[in-house]
Amino acid sequence: MIDPQAMMSEFCELVRVDSPSLREAGVAALIHDRLAEMGVESYIDQAAATVGGNSGNLIAHVPGIPGAPTVLLNAHMDTVEPGCGICPSIDGTRVCSSGATVLGADDKAGCTIILGTLRHLLDERLPHPPLEVVFTVAEEIGLVGAQALDFGALKAKMGYVLDGGRTMGVITHAAPSAYKFEWEVRGVAAHAGVCPERGINSIRVAAEAIAEMPLGRLDAETTANIGVIRGGDATNIVPELTRVRGEARSHSDAKLERQRGLMVRAFEQAAQRHRASVEAQVTSTYRSFDVAREEPVLDYAWRACERLDFEPQMERGGGGSDANVFNERGIPSVILATGPADVHTVNESVDVERMAESARWLSETLVLIAEEAQ
Ligand SMILES: [Zn+2]
Image (tube, rainbow, N blue to C red; front, side, top):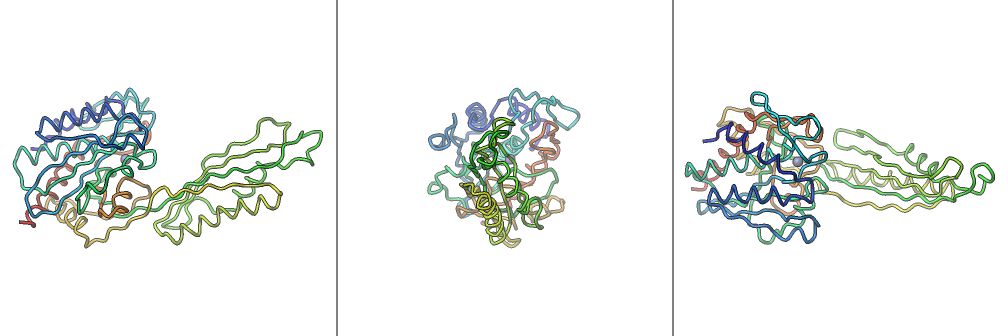
Protein backbone atom coordinates (compact mmCIF):
# COMPACT_ATOMS: atom_id res chain seq x y z
CA MET A 1 0.00 0.00 0.00
CA ILE A 2 1.19 3.52 -0.75
CA ASP A 3 0.24 5.47 2.33
CA PRO A 4 0.52 9.27 2.12
CA GLN A 5 0.88 9.54 5.93
CA ALA A 6 3.80 7.12 5.98
CA MET A 7 5.37 9.00 3.07
CA MET A 8 4.93 12.26 4.97
CA SER A 9 6.86 10.92 7.99
CA GLU A 10 9.60 9.39 5.85
CA PHE A 11 9.92 12.66 3.92
CA CYS A 12 10.17 14.72 7.13
CA GLU A 13 12.79 12.34 8.49
CA LEU A 14 14.86 12.73 5.30
CA VAL A 15 14.72 16.54 5.21
CA ARG A 16 15.73 16.79 8.89
CA VAL A 17 19.10 15.27 7.98
CA ASP A 18 21.31 18.02 6.49
CA SER A 19 22.68 17.14 3.07
CA PRO A 20 24.01 20.16 1.21
CA SER A 21 26.04 19.16 -1.86
CA LEU A 22 29.21 17.25 -0.87
CA ARG A 23 27.83 16.49 2.61
CA GLU A 24 25.36 13.73 1.81
CA ALA A 25 26.80 10.99 4.08
CA GLY A 26 24.09 11.33 6.75
CA VAL A 27 21.18 11.01 4.40
CA ALA A 28 22.91 8.20 2.46
CA ALA A 29 23.18 6.26 5.75
CA LEU A 30 19.49 6.84 6.47
CA ILE A 31 18.39 5.66 3.01
CA HIS A 32 20.75 2.67 3.30
CA ASP A 33 19.00 1.67 6.56
CA ARG A 34 15.51 2.11 5.09
CA LEU A 35 16.48 -0.10 2.14
CA ALA A 36 18.00 -2.70 4.49
CA GLU A 37 14.68 -2.87 6.39
CA MET A 38 13.05 -3.86 3.07
CA GLY A 39 15.72 -6.52 2.55
CA VAL A 40 17.47 -4.45 -0.14
CA GLU A 41 21.24 -4.19 0.12
CA SER A 42 22.94 -1.02 -1.02
CA TYR A 43 26.48 0.27 -1.24
CA ILE A 44 28.32 3.56 -1.69
CA ASP A 45 30.31 3.85 -4.92
CA GLN A 46 33.70 5.47 -5.52
CA ALA A 47 32.31 8.87 -6.60
CA ALA A 48 33.59 10.70 -3.48
CA ALA A 49 37.17 10.25 -4.73
CA THR A 50 36.48 12.40 -7.81
CA VAL A 51 33.65 14.58 -6.50
CA GLY A 52 35.36 15.42 -3.22
CA GLY A 53 32.43 15.13 -0.81
CA ASN A 54 31.90 12.96 2.26
CA SER A 55 29.85 10.33 0.38
CA GLY A 56 29.64 8.61 -2.98
CA ASN A 57 26.43 7.68 -4.75
CA LEU A 58 24.24 5.10 -3.00
CA ILE A 59 23.39 2.17 -5.28
CA ALA A 60 21.05 -0.81 -4.89
CA HIS A 61 20.30 -3.66 -7.28
CA VAL A 62 16.83 -5.15 -6.90
CA PRO A 63 16.26 -8.40 -8.82
CA GLY A 64 13.10 -8.53 -10.90
CA ILE A 65 11.31 -10.86 -13.24
CA PRO A 66 13.61 -12.49 -15.79
CA GLY A 67 13.32 -11.22 -19.35
CA ALA A 68 12.25 -7.70 -18.37
CA PRO A 69 14.60 -4.82 -19.23
CA THR A 70 16.60 -3.46 -16.30
CA VAL A 71 15.28 -0.07 -15.20
CA LEU A 72 17.23 2.71 -13.50
CA LEU A 73 15.49 4.70 -10.77
CA ASN A 74 17.17 7.91 -9.64
CA ALA A 75 16.82 10.78 -7.21
CA HIS A 76 19.57 13.03 -5.88
CA MET A 77 20.41 13.25 -2.18
CA ASP A 78 21.88 16.77 -2.06
CA THR A 79 19.89 19.97 -1.52
CA VAL A 80 20.63 23.64 -2.27
CA GLU A 81 21.45 26.30 0.33
CA PRO A 82 20.12 27.55 2.68
CA GLY A 83 19.47 23.91 3.47
CA CYS A 84 20.86 23.13 6.93
CA GLY A 85 18.67 22.76 9.99
CA ILE A 86 15.51 22.26 7.90
CA CYS A 87 12.45 22.17 10.14
CA PRO A 88 9.46 20.86 8.16
CA SER A 89 6.05 22.19 9.17
CA ILE A 90 2.87 20.38 8.24
CA ASP A 91 -0.39 21.98 7.24
CA GLY A 92 -2.92 19.34 6.24
CA THR A 93 -1.29 17.44 3.40
CA ARG A 94 1.17 20.23 2.63
CA VAL A 95 4.70 20.43 4.04
CA CYS A 96 6.79 23.58 3.96
CA SER A 97 9.96 24.80 5.68
CA SER A 98 10.09 27.26 8.59
CA GLY A 99 10.90 29.98 6.05
CA ALA A 100 14.56 30.24 7.00
CA THR A 101 15.69 27.39 4.73
CA VAL A 102 14.58 25.58 1.61
CA LEU A 103 12.42 22.51 2.27
CA GLY A 104 14.66 20.11 0.35
CA ALA A 105 11.74 18.48 -1.48
CA ASP A 106 14.15 18.90 -4.40
CA ASP A 107 14.99 16.14 -4.27
CA LYS A 108 13.99 14.37 -1.07
CA ALA A 109 10.48 14.09 -2.49
CA GLY A 110 12.12 11.97 -5.21
CA CYS A 111 14.03 9.91 -2.60
CA THR A 112 10.79 9.36 -0.62
CA ILE A 113 8.86 8.35 -3.76
CA ILE A 114 11.48 5.77 -4.74
CA LEU A 115 11.53 4.32 -1.19
CA GLY A 116 7.71 4.25 -1.06
CA THR A 117 7.52 2.60 -4.48
CA LEU A 118 10.09 -0.09 -3.63
CA ARG A 119 8.39 -0.86 -0.32
CA HIS A 120 5.03 -1.15 -2.10
CA LEU A 121 6.37 -3.44 -4.87
CA LEU A 122 8.16 -5.70 -2.39
CA ASP A 123 5.40 -5.83 0.28
CA GLU A 124 2.69 -6.62 -2.26
CA ARG A 125 4.98 -8.93 -4.25
CA LEU A 126 4.10 -7.11 -7.46
CA PRO A 127 5.84 -8.10 -10.68
CA HIS A 128 8.56 -5.59 -11.55
CA PRO A 129 11.64 -5.45 -13.77
CA PRO A 130 15.18 -5.70 -12.35
CA LEU A 131 15.97 -2.32 -10.84
CA GLU A 132 19.15 -0.31 -10.49
CA VAL A 133 18.40 2.29 -7.86
CA VAL A 134 20.85 5.18 -7.83
CA PHE A 135 20.73 7.95 -5.23
CA THR A 136 23.23 10.50 -6.49
CA VAL A 137 25.37 13.08 -4.70
CA ALA A 138 26.27 16.60 -5.87
CA GLU A 139 23.55 17.01 -8.51
CA GLU A 140 22.99 20.64 -7.64
CA ILE A 141 26.61 21.65 -8.24
CA GLY A 142 26.76 20.43 -11.83
CA LEU A 143 25.55 16.79 -11.95
CA VAL A 144 29.00 15.66 -10.83
CA GLY A 145 27.83 12.67 -8.79
CA ALA A 146 26.04 11.17 -11.80
CA GLN A 147 29.04 11.93 -14.00
CA ALA A 148 31.25 9.94 -11.61
CA LEU A 149 29.05 6.80 -11.79
CA ASP A 150 30.61 3.60 -13.13
CA PHE A 151 28.32 3.20 -16.16
CA GLY A 152 30.10 -0.03 -17.10
CA ALA A 153 28.54 -1.60 -14.01
CA LEU A 154 24.99 -0.51 -14.91
CA LYS A 155 22.79 -2.64 -17.14
CA ALA A 156 19.74 -0.35 -17.28
CA LYS A 157 18.02 0.00 -20.64
CA MET A 158 15.94 2.98 -19.52
CA GLY A 159 15.68 5.30 -16.57
CA TYR A 160 13.19 7.28 -14.49
CA VAL A 161 14.50 10.34 -12.73
CA LEU A 162 12.26 11.42 -9.83
CA ASP A 163 13.19 15.09 -9.79
CA GLY A 164 10.30 16.87 -11.45
CA GLY A 165 7.79 19.59 -10.83
CA ARG A 166 4.45 19.92 -9.21
CA THR A 167 1.85 18.72 -11.70
CA MET A 168 0.95 15.04 -11.70
CA GLY A 169 1.44 13.34 -15.05
CA VAL A 170 4.09 15.69 -16.39
CA ILE A 171 6.95 13.83 -18.08
CA THR A 172 9.97 16.00 -18.81
CA HIS A 173 11.34 14.38 -21.93
CA ALA A 174 13.84 16.99 -23.14
CA ALA A 175 16.41 19.30 -21.60
CA PRO A 176 18.93 21.76 -23.00
CA SER A 177 22.70 21.67 -23.40
CA ALA A 178 24.58 24.29 -21.43
CA TYR A 179 27.86 26.15 -21.38
CA LYS A 180 29.46 28.02 -18.50
CA PHE A 181 31.68 30.99 -19.31
CA GLU A 182 34.38 32.68 -17.30
CA TRP A 183 36.24 35.71 -18.64
CA GLU A 184 39.24 37.45 -17.21
CA VAL A 185 39.66 40.92 -18.70
CA ARG A 186 43.07 42.50 -18.08
CA GLY A 187 43.57 46.22 -18.63
CA VAL A 188 46.21 48.51 -17.14
CA ALA A 189 45.99 50.12 -13.71
CA ALA A 190 46.67 53.86 -13.36
CA HIS A 191 45.82 56.70 -11.00
CA ALA A 192 42.34 57.79 -12.03
CA GLY A 193 42.95 61.47 -11.25
CA VAL A 194 46.63 61.92 -12.09
CA CYS A 195 47.16 59.86 -15.26
CA PRO A 196 44.02 58.03 -16.41
CA GLU A 197 45.32 58.13 -20.01
CA ARG A 198 47.96 55.59 -19.01
CA GLY A 199 45.33 53.14 -17.85
CA ILE A 200 43.05 50.69 -19.64
CA ASN A 201 39.77 50.23 -17.80
CA SER A 202 38.88 46.53 -17.65
CA ILE A 203 35.37 47.27 -16.27
CA ARG A 204 34.68 49.42 -19.31
CA VAL A 205 35.82 46.62 -21.63
CA ALA A 206 33.61 44.08 -19.84
CA ALA A 207 30.64 46.47 -19.86
CA GLU A 208 30.89 47.06 -23.61
CA ALA A 209 31.19 43.35 -24.31
CA ILE A 210 28.15 42.54 -22.16
CA ALA A 211 26.10 45.36 -23.69
CA GLU A 212 26.74 43.96 -27.16
CA MET A 213 25.80 40.34 -26.64
CA PRO A 214 22.26 38.95 -26.85
CA LEU A 215 21.08 37.90 -23.36
CA GLY A 216 17.94 36.64 -21.64
CA ARG A 217 15.40 34.57 -23.55
CA LEU A 218 16.72 34.45 -27.10
CA ASP A 219 14.04 32.16 -28.55
CA ALA A 220 11.80 29.32 -27.41
CA GLU A 221 14.83 27.02 -27.08
CA THR A 222 17.68 29.27 -26.04
CA THR A 223 18.61 31.43 -23.03
CA ALA A 224 21.77 33.24 -21.93
CA ASN A 225 22.80 35.13 -18.83
CA ILE A 226 25.67 37.09 -17.34
CA GLY A 227 25.36 36.38 -13.63
CA VAL A 228 28.54 37.57 -11.91
CA ILE A 229 30.84 40.53 -12.45
CA ARG A 230 33.75 41.43 -10.16
CA GLY A 231 36.38 44.04 -10.81
CA GLY A 232 38.24 47.03 -9.44
CA ASP A 233 39.52 48.00 -6.00
CA ALA A 234 38.96 51.72 -5.50
CA THR A 235 37.28 54.68 -7.21
CA ASN A 236 40.63 56.42 -7.75
CA ILE A 237 42.26 53.52 -9.63
CA VAL A 238 41.61 52.61 -13.26
CA PRO A 239 40.72 48.93 -12.73
CA GLU A 240 43.22 46.46 -14.13
CA LEU A 241 41.29 43.21 -13.66
CA THR A 242 37.61 42.28 -14.13
CA ARG A 243 36.16 38.78 -13.96
CA VAL A 244 32.80 37.95 -15.51
CA ARG A 245 30.81 34.72 -15.33
CA GLY A 246 27.81 33.66 -17.38
CA GLU A 247 26.00 30.80 -19.03
CA ALA A 248 24.02 29.84 -22.14
CA ARG A 249 21.52 27.01 -22.66
CA SER A 250 19.69 25.66 -25.67
CA HIS A 251 17.70 22.64 -26.76
CA SER A 252 19.40 23.09 -30.14
CA ASP A 253 23.13 22.45 -30.21
CA ALA A 254 23.51 24.58 -33.37
CA LYS A 255 21.90 27.58 -31.65
CA LEU A 256 24.02 27.03 -28.57
CA GLU A 257 27.22 27.03 -30.64
CA ARG A 258 26.13 30.25 -32.33
CA GLN A 259 25.42 31.94 -28.98
CA ARG A 260 28.73 30.73 -27.58
CA GLY A 261 30.47 32.35 -30.57
CA LEU A 262 28.63 35.66 -30.08
CA MET A 263 29.46 35.85 -26.37
CA VAL A 264 33.12 34.97 -26.81
CA ARG A 265 33.54 37.35 -29.77
CA ALA A 266 31.91 40.27 -27.93
CA PHE A 267 34.66 40.08 -25.31
CA GLU A 268 37.44 39.66 -27.88
CA GLN A 269 36.29 42.66 -29.91
CA ALA A 270 35.78 44.93 -26.89
CA ALA A 271 39.24 43.96 -25.62
CA GLN A 272 40.75 44.69 -29.03
CA ARG A 273 39.15 48.14 -29.23
CA HIS A 274 40.71 49.10 -25.91
CA ARG A 275 44.00 47.19 -26.31
CA ALA A 276 43.11 45.11 -23.26
CA SER A 277 43.55 41.35 -23.11
CA VAL A 278 40.89 38.76 -22.38
CA GLU A 279 41.01 35.10 -21.51
CA ALA A 280 37.84 33.01 -21.88
CA GLN A 281 37.16 29.67 -20.25
CA VAL A 282 34.18 27.85 -21.72
CA THR A 283 33.01 24.58 -20.14
CA SER A 284 30.26 22.30 -21.31
CA THR A 285 28.05 21.76 -18.24
CA TYR A 286 25.71 19.13 -19.69
CA ARG A 287 24.41 17.82 -23.00
CA SER A 288 20.83 18.14 -24.24
CA PHE A 289 18.45 15.22 -24.71
CA ASP A 290 15.09 14.71 -26.35
CA VAL A 291 13.28 11.40 -25.77
CA ALA A 292 10.60 10.75 -28.42
CA ARG A 293 7.00 9.88 -27.51
CA GLU A 294 7.33 6.36 -28.94
CA GLU A 295 10.50 5.48 -26.98
CA PRO A 296 9.68 2.66 -24.52
CA VAL A 297 10.78 4.66 -21.45
CA LEU A 298 8.31 7.42 -22.23
CA ASP A 299 5.59 5.17 -23.59
CA TYR A 300 5.44 3.03 -20.41
CA ALA A 301 5.16 6.09 -18.16
CA TRP A 302 2.53 7.57 -20.49
CA ARG A 303 0.33 4.48 -20.51
CA ALA A 304 0.76 3.89 -16.76
CA CYS A 305 -0.45 7.44 -16.19
CA GLU A 306 -3.54 6.79 -18.30
CA ARG A 307 -4.23 3.55 -16.40
CA LEU A 308 -4.37 5.68 -13.24
CA ASP A 309 -6.74 8.16 -14.92
CA PHE A 310 -4.27 11.01 -14.89
CA GLU A 311 -3.61 13.02 -17.98
CA PRO A 312 -0.04 12.44 -19.17
CA GLN A 313 1.78 15.47 -20.55
CA MET A 314 5.14 15.91 -22.24
CA GLU A 315 7.18 18.95 -21.26
CA ARG A 316 10.59 20.33 -22.24
CA GLY A 317 12.72 21.24 -19.23
CA GLY A 318 14.77 24.44 -18.94
CA GLY A 319 17.54 23.11 -16.74
CA GLY A 320 19.99 20.29 -16.33
CA SER A 321 19.44 17.24 -14.14
CA ASP A 322 20.99 13.81 -13.74
CA ALA A 323 18.74 12.76 -16.65
CA ASN A 324 21.09 14.69 -18.98
CA VAL A 325 23.96 12.49 -17.83
CA PHE A 326 22.03 9.20 -18.12
CA ASN A 327 20.85 10.06 -21.64
CA GLU A 328 24.34 11.11 -22.66
CA ARG A 329 25.69 7.81 -21.34
CA GLY A 330 23.19 5.77 -23.36
CA ILE A 331 20.37 5.18 -20.86
CA PRO A 332 17.23 6.85 -22.32
CA SER A 333 15.70 8.59 -19.31
CA VAL A 334 12.79 10.91 -18.55
CA ILE A 335 11.93 12.97 -15.48
CA LEU A 336 8.67 12.33 -13.63
CA ALA A 337 6.77 14.94 -11.61
CA THR A 338 7.26 14.55 -7.86
CA GLY A 339 5.08 17.31 -6.41
CA PRO A 340 7.21 20.20 -5.09
CA ALA A 341 6.51 23.88 -5.75
CA ASP A 342 8.88 26.90 -5.52
CA VAL A 343 12.04 24.79 -5.39
CA HIS A 344 15.36 26.55 -4.71
CA THR A 345 13.56 29.15 -2.56
CA VAL A 346 12.67 29.34 1.14
CA ASN A 347 8.99 29.16 0.10
CA GLU A 348 9.45 25.62 -1.23
CA SER A 349 6.60 23.25 -0.36
CA VAL A 350 5.29 19.84 -1.32
CA ASP A 351 1.89 18.20 -1.12
CA VAL A 352 2.14 14.68 0.20
CA GLU A 353 -0.88 13.61 -1.89
CA ARG A 354 1.13 14.51 -5.03
CA MET A 355 4.07 12.48 -3.74
CA ALA A 356 1.81 9.47 -3.15
CA GLU A 357 0.33 9.85 -6.66
CA SER A 358 3.82 9.97 -8.08
CA ALA A 359 4.74 6.76 -6.22
CA ARG A 360 1.58 5.07 -7.57
CA TRP A 361 2.53 6.25 -11.04
CA LEU A 362 6.07 4.90 -10.75
CA SER A 363 4.82 1.55 -9.38
CA GLU A 364 2.24 1.28 -12.15
CA THR A 365 4.93 2.03 -14.75
CA LEU A 366 7.21 -0.70 -13.39
CA VAL A 367 4.36 -3.22 -13.14
CA LEU A 368 3.42 -2.43 -16.77
CA ILE A 369 7.00 -3.03 -17.93
CA ALA A 370 7.05 -6.37 -16.09
CA GLU A 371 3.62 -7.44 -17.40
CA GLU A 372 4.59 -6.80 -21.00
CA ALA A 373 7.87 -8.70 -20.62
CA GLN A 374 6.10 -11.83 -19.44
ZN1 LIG B 1 16.66 18.44 -8.23
